[in-house]
Image (cartoon, rainbow, N blue to C red):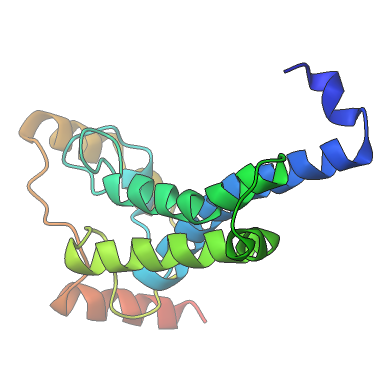
Length: 179
């Protein structure tokens, strides 16, 4: 396939864009579900930039199998309709589904990711909305101090991840103090 053939006609270009949205809808569904529904806006900022195996964002060997499984499910719902868009004979239902490919892929990927996270919980989640504000008052909270990083690297992380009990109440009070 030559890239300039995509622009040879408006039909080719539209088909290309529709195919592209099949893949993007699944990515968007997983990301939005993770942030707004599963984690409820909570992130451990320091651990986002850590490659330690004890980090809550390391997942399984550095990959989130829940995210990939949901991504594939979001794509699969639209594949048959995509085959019909490039000229093959497919059932009418697949064509109708493909006409709504972004919404179908988004909803299927989001629902799959949510269900996988409910049955196989992930660390670093909150039970209440805990979005970090855009104003950093103490850079040490986000980046830590050299002493903290030396301590973690020499001892290994023994901290349990997740927001529960007293820690959750302290975070909620700190967030309210910022208003």
